[in-house]
Structures are given as C-alpha cells and as structure tokens.
Length: 477
Image (cartoon, rainbow, N blue to C red; front, side, top):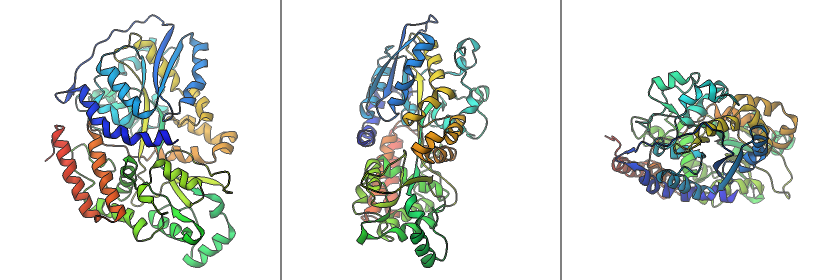
C-alpha cells in the first residue's frame, strides 16, 4: 500500500516534463501503425503493479488464454515508473505493447498516441468474443475516463449523465480511447463498533440532543468528529490528507464541489474556480477542522493517503477517508463500515479511474481491442472482485452487493463505492496538471498549518496556476 500511495507524488512532479516529450506545438503528432487481423499467439500488456490491483488482472489471465488461445504477456510496473514507461513507449512509436493501462491525468497528452475505438465498437466483426455493452458502464466514470476531444483535449464531455452513445460522442467531436477499469473515489470509513455502542449513543444524545449517526453533511461531520475527539484517550475524530502532495488537492477539490463550486478546480473555460469566495469558504472549513475544532491527530498536516489509512487502522481516529477499503490492525478490536463522503450543497467526492487502451502503434490492434473488451466485461470484472477490483460497471456493483461472501469480506464497501462513483468529480484536463496540482496542494497545506490565511493562500496559488496555464499555451485571461 505504501508504494502505491507514496509514488504518486513523484509522478506528479515529473509529469509535465515527460509530457513535453510527446507534445509538439501544443498538439500531438498524428500516429500511424498497421494492424493485422490475423490472430496472434500472444499480446503484450503494460499494467500497474499495485495501483490498479494487478492481482485482479492476473487472476483472469488463464481464463483468457483458455478461451481464446492467446497468451497475455503481462508487465507490471509501480506507478512512478509506469507513467514514464507509457510515455517513453508512445514517444518512440514502439509497437511492443499492444495494450496499456492509462491513468486519467495522462490522457490530455496522449490522445494522439492511443487508438480511438469508435470504429471498433461499431464493427460487429470485432465484437465477436465480447460486446462492450456501453450502457452498463457508470456514465460519469466512462465519460471522465475514456471520452476526449482529440483536438481540444482540455474539454470534458458536455453531458456526463446522458446514455453512452458512440454516434452522439463522435458527432460532438469526441472519441473513445479505452474502457474503464479500476474506478477509484474518496469514500468515508468509520468505526461501526463505536457508532453502535449504546454508551456512545447515550452520551452523544445527551450532549447534542440528537441521535448519534454517521454524518451525512459536513456540519454533522464536525459534531461527530468533536464528540469522538479525546486526546487523553489517544482518540480523534478524523484523519485528513493535508500533507504536501496530490492527496491535499483531492481533499480540497472535494470540499470545493460540496460547497457548490466546480470540483474540477479549473473548468473548461479556464476560469480559476478554486480561487473564489466558495473556494475560500471550503478551504477555511478544512483549516478549521485542524486548527479551530482540533479533531485531527497530531501531524495531520504531513498526512498522505497511506498515513491516513495506517492512522485509522491503528485505532487513532473514529473516521477517515480514502480510495480503498481499509482494515484495523489485529491489536485493535472493532469493526469498519463505509459511507459516502458527506455533502454540503451537494456531493462531490474526488474520483479518477484507470482504463485499458490500445496502443496506436500495435501490430495487433484488432485483437488488442477484443482483449480489452473481454477484460472489462461484466462477467470478467465480477471474477476480479475477490482481488479487490474497483469495478466500472453497474451490473458488477449489483452483483457485489448481493454476494454474501463479498459482503462478509469487505462489508458495505462496494455498495458505497458504486454510489460514490455515480456522483464523483474528476480532474481538469491539462497537459501540465502537475504544475496546477502542486500550486494548489501547497495552498491547502499552508492554510492547514496556519502559515497563510485561506484567502491569501488561494490567491497565491491562483498567481502560480495562471502563469503555468499561460506557459502551457492555454487561453487564460
């Protein structure tokens, strides 16, 4: 878990520099590559070691070979090296990898190197071993992950709630660049044993004149976090991820969306939506959790994803948030359950999803397409659940919730994960997102530590972000 969570920071610092290898004059060079319809004996796949749960994909590889007689040569690489490998392979027009797993922050720089799939989806001959069944994908996940405008890669699809239709997508100038797999979103974990304790319930009722319940709003969250904060007992209300890193940006963008702002931080019109009165209100609330309400453990301004998980696992907090299911240490007696991250004006949990894509330079593009269709199908994703895959399909979540063995293993995690993905908010689509990301996480950390007031901190970030966007050639006024 530590490798997965900690390497992301290094990736984000290096992303802009690596992107420059691929970007020429603000757009990507068009790519060629031929594809043979002859059935290959093997396909080469590049995959993430831990980040996209490689154990899940490994579990179904024998089934693919048994059914189709094609061996998948799987190379798995940790996150930081994976991004560099993907960009290097595509920059050199290498045909070695037929299938690549791609993370959403990379795609604005890769649309010219990843094979568009609309023509494959519409060709019945290429959907003979599995059908894409686009309507079964969670719509928000599919549009955020796989649908891009190749000439204006900063644009999000205009209506992410409408049914997924290839003709409608291409008619509006967009393309499909893969199929989502491993969908991650911020969810809240909490100590169910504490919330269910009759003594805790009675004490909360007496103090707040209402029943103790899992918080559904951020106002409720403050009350519950204050109630469970007992420094003398080494117990605090909640973790946060306020340390220097992408995790702090994700915490803030969730609150920005919840307070009614644009959780993308920078909308497609390049307005700096994070540096607004709404943004200040959201960041002030975040800072207050630490400095005013004091419901977080010592050192929280250095926390990352893995620190939050390990802190909660050690029994130090009653609530936490993360992208994956968490567990208590063997020495901690208790039970974990999950809930959607609270709302304010609305819900807005940050999300981001991996997808399987076809290398445009592959010599086996048609069979690579068939393979990713099979790997992301409902039946195959269902088989990956026991290895903790985060599905991208509605039907798979329905099966997960109904499967008593999975409920016994993971509790209500899959139920909450699916519901959270349906209301999640992704990132801005920028080739230099790492620069923007860093400016914002510095602002969040400065406000969280109390070094800089939230409004001044966001104004400082806005200056840095505006300069970065202008240097990348974006039309910022």
